[in-house]
Image (tube, rainbow, N blue to C red):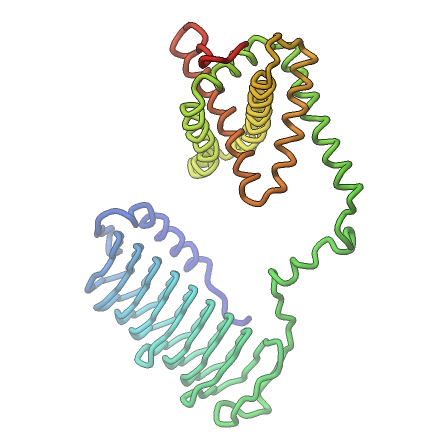
Length: 396
């Protein structure tokens, strides 16, 4: 592309946005520094008489009046009605250029449009999902988007890249036209002479469609029943071994957690829900603080570990309660507890094959077990206390 943004323009835009974006969600603010004017707020709407540059940021940005030099605007809904003596740089979800531009126009957004009265004296560079050019461009035009519509006169060369390209009745190109699409487009001779048109065919990718074939060379078919059963056995063996280690080496804390889960099931479910919400909430909070970004992987690891341990605790507490309800009054030894855990894991795993109900039961076990852990941590922070009594009819 022959048209390039100068480094000065890019730096100016970034500095301006950095200064204004921090206040973009606050009350409308106006700041003057030298001859530059900074605007920010939920709705940065002003009628201006700016002696130099204007830099605006907000959810809604609407610039009216006149700007002697450059205008920089960013927001969700951006409209530039002001006449500018310099260049316009705009970015947002919806960007509409209505005022005349003394030099160059650079805009990017989901929807970008220049209206018929928006005359650009210099070059125009536009990018978006849907780009509509109705305002005349004296210089060169560079535009790219999923859909590009040209319905204005362009004095210089034009470069267009689009998935869908259309020309309106007012389209005129004084220079050459180079367009990049998936297939050639019929261009009326009234727009540009055929000998000044260059077509470059490009392969238009669809990432969602292409993702459908990922891994087919490695996994050309679904795994067989034997593979599924082997995976189930390995997972069951790992969870049983992990649970057996806890029952063997730290039986007292496990027993205290089981007692707490059986004594206060409702409170455990609520505490588990809150604890899980806090764990998942640490991920975006850590990412937003920037400083906490290095800790995000450890938070995710903690979620996986606690989820697994809570699942084991819930399955163990439920299985042992069922065994005792069946009439086994003798306190089981280590192997008896491991056997109860194994049986419980098999049953709750098979429940997953029941649509909706199965995974809800498994999730409830996780919340139940995690809640018992949370309540024990709260009790530990509060100080020593007697273990939670079992409900009437329960045995240790």
